[in-house]
Length: 359
Image (cartoon, rainbow, N blue to C red; front, side):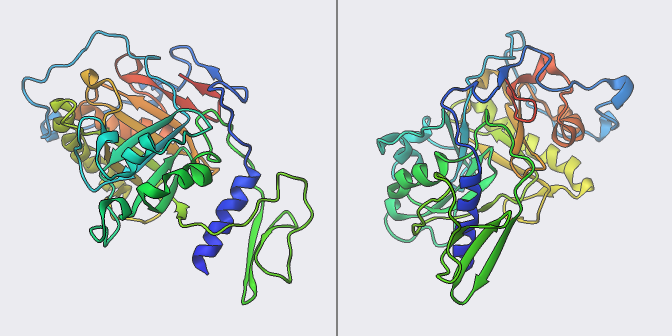
């Protein structure tokens, strides 16, 4: 019954959320000029980004660390509509993750179905695989995906089910150029022996209870209830830090990601915000390793997703050239406040759904 309630809640949200536009600048969104996408830290007002004694910083990049320090960063990333992280339990993958045999990533490439709501950014991740995933053939092994910016976890995904995943979850999902839905309609759920019904603002919109049929509402507000092989739930984290760790693309990514994770953890733990891979406590900061996102010559690449009061991702702040000594300021200002400490050096791009801006 719990899975039925979860499915109905998800469907109720989908029918109350506007569908995504295929235009990356649709719904009134605009491209932000440099310096206008996110607020910048002003030390005179906000304080210094690092308050630590340098001697306390014991994590350093390799001595011969060399990256591109000169090329312009801002506005050079390709826009995306949705971002999907696939749980693999690994921190490195074949050069092109879509070539990983028998995986959801490969199926996304080969299934012949493309998302209808804009470009999908696909990332393999070190999110843990479900227990028992070794059973059966590779093509039948279920895994978990995390869909952004909706902050939705979808379980029981197999390569064979990818077309249905696209149809039921990705196509109707919120995108980076979709305004945040606020205020959220009041939704109540009634669970009886006869079935489950969901009511919003006094109207029964979804029901499996024959004694409480759905109200007569204009189409397309009346979806067809159909069984789903997936289980979906909100991601428990308030913030996500994504670190490119793919050594097969560039050794620097494989070297920097573990070091940055340790330094981020050092600053998050005193705030009681650190969440490891198996920590499902609400709020907090989840840190995941992901596959190549482009720009490894600017390592380390860091993507910060920030959840809005609506429950969805309101911002993604994409940084590059990040070093361990930058982590304190990123936690204090970027993760917790949505500000950029060193925009000229670090900011590659991102989106702000609250402002209607993308890079």
